[in-house]
Amino acid sequence: MIQNSLLENDILGSIGSEKYICKIVWRNGTLIMDEPKNIGGQDSGPDPYTTLLASLAGCTLSTLRMYIDRKGWDIPEISVRMNMRQETENGLITIIKRDIFFPTNLPDDQKERLLVIATKCPVSKILENNIVINTNKNNGDTTE
Image (cartoon, one colour):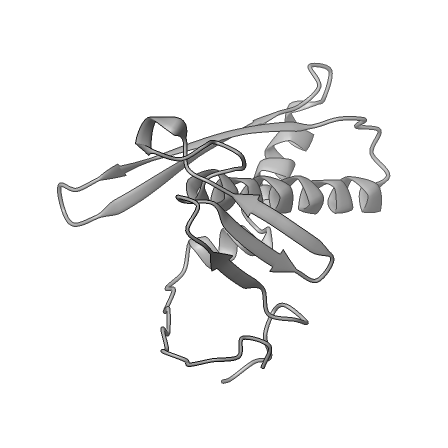
């Protein structure tokens, strides 16, 4: 089954001669991405790994907020901390650590339910399933 794109408009990324600084144009602005100084970048924006984890963090938190609001629960703030590592014993495996911090007075049953809801955020579902990247060569105009 073929479905429509998840984004209304494509994002456009470009890089010039300034080492590792990438300009990512999205529907409402521009994001600058860069690499850390220890590998030759200027650290003027998030690196690709940080951006990937930021996507998961934002989706997780938004999904939890939607659920909390729908349930009418009084939870003023939730935080998330993430990192990832790779293992190569049985092929390349990427392991993302997602720690969610709830208010200390939140009942355990609500915490457990919110942990389940966090795994249902759309970016979690994308990252936990098969991903196919179709790479094409194009010449000329990038506005198509």
